[in-house]
Image (cartoon, rainbow, N blue to C red; front, side, top):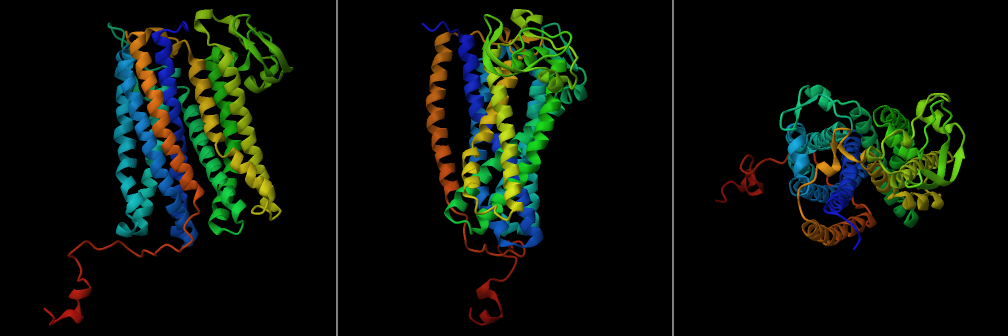
Length: 469
């Protein structure tokens, strides 16, 4: 009735599940590093407020981490059910890389997670700080391998194709550190830090509106504003470098993002701020343009040639309808984050950081925008790669399993129901935790690890107990 195929639903199912999944690692990567900073700050300064904030955010991290693990496991099954051809052809390369992620990164963060969450009174501050650092390093390691896998699919190198059509590794260094990987990795990690900074600033702003003298709220809000001020401009620079790399390796994607159907062989491409892309008519209707600016942004030159979508065969080009807008939302939110950080810095300079209620309200409104930007960035990257799973080599239509429409539609419906119930409840619980104020009581000091049972005399076994047996 809706003229959909099993391939359409398989693509939508993967997009649906990965959209839920990606927001939790994006948050946990940044939050793990924030927890390491809080733990180190308390270890160095001894200020109780840092330990209170650590205990506050570690509970939120544990819930988000668990939700990310659960949503990620579900995605792996889809490679066998809906994308078995893709798994067969890319398995010799992507399989080992996913295994490296589990062995070198996930085991590290999972192994030290229990110590970080429950072991402070048992191992002492020093080892507890080390465990927190290991969790943070593990989350960054997971991002390293996952981004390397995705980047190889975008810019495949270091491979050969055997007699049964499988991609086989020839140069692992080239595969792991493929041409787009450094840009994607930096861009994603900075996005994770920005996402976490926005959430922390939103929570801090919420509590400052209730009590602007709350020391814990002041501390987290100031730290988040500082992180925004530093990270947002770095992200804009990283995004610019990533765009130049994408133009080199995936020019059709850039043309769709910019809404350029016609090429500009002599340069002078305008920046289309807004409009309505029409893939059928191959034009952007009602376009609002700034002359030459697209050339200046993409090539840092006014006369360098820029290709358009018409320069590529129709069957090899992505549609512009979606990524034209997701790209603009992502960029717009990036500059909004920069503006929020600058507002916070100006308020701090004027000594008004903790009593500017409109700044706090703006931080609350911007709290979830990091997740929106991450989703828009992912959509831009993945939809812009179409019609390929391995860019230029393996088409999406040739990657799917030979499954029928009813089978895919049934599993998709089940995913939608279960995901909205489980992750809806989980998100509600996270918001409930964030609405609570950090504990106002000073945490109990821990000077060293707790002795194991039987290694030291108990209260009734000392000198006062002699002769009582």
